[in-house]
Image (cartoon, rainbow, N blue to C red; front, top):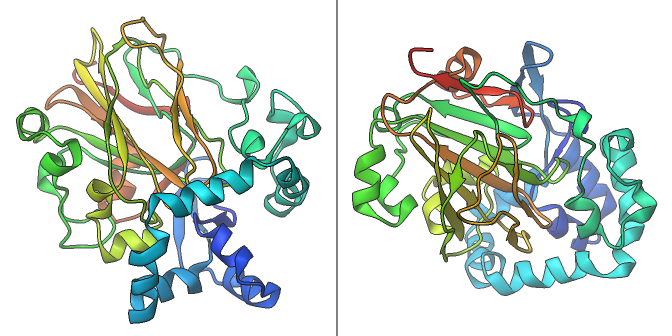
Length: 329
């Protein structure tokens, strides 16, 4: 993939593209107000938000908010853009995208010229050696490449993307009783940008249950929008899958849709045993998010994840790297 903490295209890339102003897009991309902590480099790295001016207009301007409500958050808008990215003509965007974001084509299972559309490239598979998986059976791994926030006690924090915003588990899970079982448990939020590898995987060995679709809108899950309103996480379309494990209890896995995400595709088979890091599914075009929930007392999150999250900083780490350990191990 690209350099950790490098320029991150937000899920508004399509909007900027349609603005018909190359200079404006360039100006947006040059701004770098946001930083993530790179696990690889052990330091903060600036991460410009592509389309920042557009996002600020959409969420901060009355006319922009009207546009958001009437069109941008609607499923038809994302379906339309997803259709565009699935057309053969969209292959012309693949090589420029790779060049712009410095993606490593050597990691791809198939070369770019084998892609039949931009969406085909977007949901590309990687060579197994591109993402080594921590083999320790007491270790839980990140389910996806991304920028991660982790909280040892989800009920005791009010500093997700902005202070004063608290996670509403009952609405997120769509089930108050289930939420009560995980209150006080650990949560990891993994935010993916369009330049990332967009397949998601199981963080541990186990048996997945049926996937529940919780329908909703498709707001952006960019930090700019989440800082203004965290509730988009439980207002957006999402899927919920329980994973029964011997070492970590039942893990809840959610995939959250976002603006210009054509669809969330599940490739796993319910009831069929999966190894740690087994593929669960993939996102089509757009920025997206995975959320992993553990029952209280089951895991201890990685130190760097907890430390950076306590400061409101996302940790950049890759799928297969350690996310947590079994409590007491």
